[in-house]
Length: 165
Image (cartoon, rainbow, N blue to C red; front, side, top):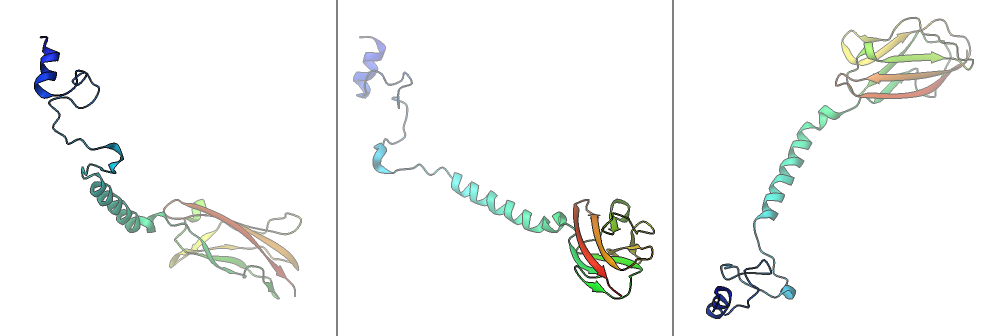
């Protein structure tokens, strides 16, 4: 008898086993029918759960580093009407901003700009950015700002205010 047939006779398994077509004579895993719903527990679920929780924890701890400088307050206020022309526009942000990389542009309906200097931080607060203005006449003005926060994230926006003496 040849070796393959002999192996089949000794183990009681079909001839094709051992040729890559299913569990062979040396495979000691239990065989279950495919419709039994049996899944081998190899610990992958616990591994995945541990790592998913660790990633979630690290993401929650580092979220302040990913914050953007959002506009919280403006003087003159967004959409407001003021009776005296303001000498400056002051913006307060949720994060500190870099004045070197931030802009505040104030223009009228004709597109004329009224900034007298580059924007500056308040001496005691990096979250406050202001720009001095040239004298304003009665009319509606648009403030367009671009802010780069101290963690280098960029935000932008615009709003209007009206001078009506």
